[in-house]
Image: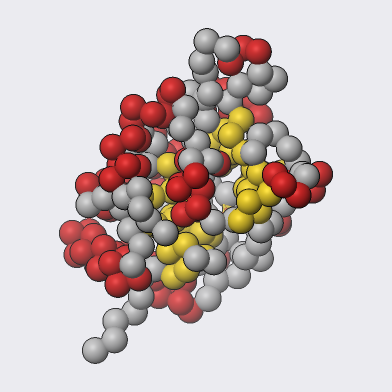
Length: 239
Ligand code: SF4
């Protein structure tokens, strides 16, 4: 019997898509802002598939979900999962999603993604490369010492990715915590605006390649090396 798939692909990347938009309209973006909703690539319209995935996540016991997610990843040949290609983890599901992320990590699944759910991020940001999306640059410096932080640029459609790069020489850098930009079909190094980026600075927008090449969310810094080297090296041959 065919079961409904929990995981769908975003390009080449196995991903979780939850319904986007406000909870009172059936979405999961409890921490969204008026601005992000107005510029959301999903147009805040959810599909039957996304609503079905959310229903399954809600109704299936967490231990069973871990097995199903892992089996789907094995079937697809990639132990890699991007969370919330769109949609987000609502407050009520935080503990369940934390459990899933940490159990999948134990099984060697490399994970990344975006959330605006700060309690969720606080609990998993030392274990997986989940980026906390914030609107203000003033929040970045303190947060990026803890985990990956993302700031959307609504003009370019890109998201700047930040992680502390603090080293003995970091004070010489203009932005000692920038690690790249992601979105609109490309990823770049550094602080380059996507629209102005030289062609050679553009990479394919593919989380698995960023992981393989340790860029963007997977930039290895003194702050991240110790925490992530075990899980990142565990599946170094992921394609
Ligand atoms: S939180 Fe993300 S997915 Fe949700 S409405 Fe905002 S931009 Fe779209």
